[in-house]
Structures are given as structure tokens and as C-alpha cells.
Length: 553
Image 1 (cartoon, one colour):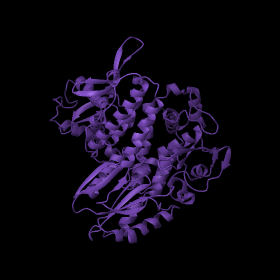
Image 2 (cartoon, helix red, strand yellow):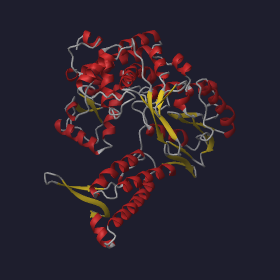
Image 3 (cartoon, rainbow, N blue to C red):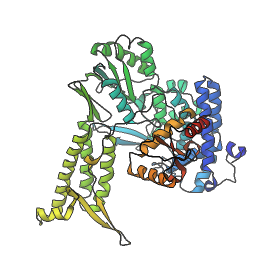
């Protein structure tokens, strides 16, 4: 792909003929330059590079690719238009122009919350989604460079598990803080000041203002928007994060002697939920909370009085679906009662909706729900909760089976739906026969079989857009693959292809030799995570170390 191709959408390039590896490399190169310019304080240089990225063919193509391949690709906006064909996608690339761009209002839908209230969700049209994805490519490198160190929500390579591990680090020791300020921002996405965002967010001000003032359509009526960024927009989470970034720095500037004076102040934030630790209830309520209120007021935000409180660690508090509490001086993180109750409610709904369904179909629908929830809590003290969930699920399934056969005895129902597998009895299982005559057994997942493994928290200053951190993220990626059967199978295939030898020093790789995984064509350069593009190597052999230095250099 030549320079002319990168600059604008050439008429001769079809969607199926785009070299996506080349596109990814070009976008990655510009993002890296934006990071370096931001780190050096060259904000005008970063702005110029953002302009290059948002006006390049590669940036536009990657933006269209994202919105046409994500989960919301089949959900239209107010214009009912979807980009499904290659021709429509090619034309979409050419349509992403700043001049003459006028966003359509969002289609608003209301989704229920666990407290019985509803949350407004705004669905942009496809062109607006693509424009947001395009400008996100240019904004995210700056957001990741300037973000709070202990912010974990809606950021690449960060998760709730990282936030939970940071909570454990701040509160687990005997000398750790005993009081916690639980804070929640009231209607964060809907209340952010437009004037503040237009003034302080380092992106195209003209386009940003158009997005913020686009309005929304609800029940066939058009409503204006005077504040907030709509939930549902691709760029909205980053805008909200950048609005709240600086809170941690503000606290350390306002209380510079907090560590030396024994205040034990730490902050952990996930999106608009955050906690602040301290050594006393009075200090958190009288000094820290007013400082937070003042910081938020500048941005048009207020704390939720219902969810904001100061709690002693012995009483515990709920955060991100976990209950964090000290028992006789020992900190334990468990799945919260509310989260477990909601999980059982979802399982109950699935079983209720499948009363007449085949047993195999019911298992297919239940397993993803059980697996997802168990994996989420697999880093905390959850074995007892998993066992209790399994017991409740068994009771639900037994009632489901008995109601299907009111004229049959309990023994017949048991033999029909519950099997013995190894040392386990009462296993909810069935044999599925495919069209070609092949048979496959479907077994309901048992959450108590999920292994508990402590999560390794991401380094606070790690930046996925900074080339200096590429080796670090590749190492985390390889270790993450070990946590799933699919990932372990992929690693085994790579190991077998290399005859169990390091790709650089050609010496054996075993459990006792520290190893890593890297892409033959790096992921940042458009390489896939398929086994054919992976290679295993020793972390401590000289040739691997030299290879890493050459990559960074």
C-alpha cells in the first residue's frame, strides 16, 4: 500500500483487496508517534499527528472494519442503515469526511438496571459510529498516556480483576487503611459538562461538539442534549475516563504528606465507581470527600448520596461484584450476595424459558452463563459460593425435569436426566446426535470445578500504545493463554511445531525454563493470534534478550 493509498480512499481499492496487516502497521506507527509526542509535552505535534490519522485511508478503513465486525453491527440507528456488503463498506470509507459532516440524532432505548431503575442507551447511526471509531484511534493513545495510574475501567489490557487485585494490595496488610470511602457518581455519562469536554479533551473540537449536541430520538420525539456523553457511543467511555482522569493526581497534590503522616490514602477507580482508603472516618468525610466533590463540580458531576458512604473494613463493602472485608485481621474477597443472587436469577430465567426445550439445548444455553460468572470470580475466595450455586442449580434442574414427566417416578427421572461420570453422580448430561450420525455428549458445567488462581495485576504505568511495553504485554498474553483450555491447546500446537525447542537458541522448553510467546508478525503490526503466527522462546536466553532489544530499538 503506497502513500497515495494511505492518504485517501482510491477508487480502485475494493474492500476485499485491502491489506489489513499494512493498514494496522500504518495506524500503529502513527499512534506510537502520538504517544511519544504526548510524553515529550509536544501537544501541537500530537495534534498534527491526530489530524494525519483521522484523514488517512488506513485510519478510515480500520474504523469501518471495527463497526462492521463488532457485536452491534446489526443494530441500526435512526436511519435503519447497516453496512453489510463489501461495496457498502468501501463506500463508507470514502464517506468519512470532516467537511460537511453532520451527525444524526441517536436512537434511545432504555435498559433495566439491577435496582429496578433504567439506564438510557444511545445508538448512533453507522456513519457516526465509524467517525467515533476513527477519532478514537487518534484519542486513545493520549488517553492511555495521561490516564490515572489506578484507573481500570474501559481501558485496553485492563480489567476488573486488576482493580480487585489493587484493592487487595491496598487493604490486605495489618497496617493497611481501615476506612474506605465508597463513591459512585450520579448519572456520570449523562451529566458531564459539554463546555468542560470541549475545552479539555484533546480531539477535534468541531466534530466533538457536533456529537455532543446531536440529540436523541425517543418514542418518535426529538430531544436536545445539553450535557453528558451518550452511553452506547464507541468513544463515550474514553471521554468519560478522560473527564475523571486527574482525580488521583489531585488527591496527591492536595494531600502531599498523606503517606508520611500515616493517612494511608490510596485510590482505585473503575469507570465511575471508585474507592479511596484512609486511616480515619473523620479525615475521609471532612477533607477527602469535599476535595472530590469540588473536583467533580468543575466537570458538572455530583456524587450519588445513596451509594456514597464511609465504611470500616471490618464491616466490608461491595465493589465490582465482590464483597471485600476483613475477618479477624485477614482480608477476604468473595462474590457479593447481590451478585450471586442476580446470577441465580439469570439462570432461573434461562431454565424457565426452556421448559419444553431439549436437554442438550438447555445445557448449551446454561454453560456460557455458568462459565462466564465462574471465570469472573475465579481470582477471589469463591469455592464455597461456587458450591452453593451448583446446589441451587441442581435444585432448579430437578424441578425442571420432574415437571416434564408428572407421571414418572423420581428414579426414572434421575436415570433419564442425571448420569454418573467418574466419581461424580447426579451429573446433568445428555447425548446429542448430529445430522451426520456422530454423537456428542453435552455435560452441564460445574462451577465448583473452576480453579481459583490469583490474578497478576498489570503494572500501573503500562501503556499498550508505547513500543517500550510490547514485550511486557506479549508476556502477559502468553500467561493468559494458560488459563483456558483453548489457549493451552494452542500453546501445545506451537510447542509441538517447534519440537519443544526455543525458537531462538534451539534448546528444550520445559516447565522449569521460563518461556514466553511472541508473534512472528507482531500483533501491533497486524499479526493474528493464530497458532501459525506464534512462536515460543526462552525469556532468559541471550539470543531472546537480544531479539527483544532489537525489537524495542
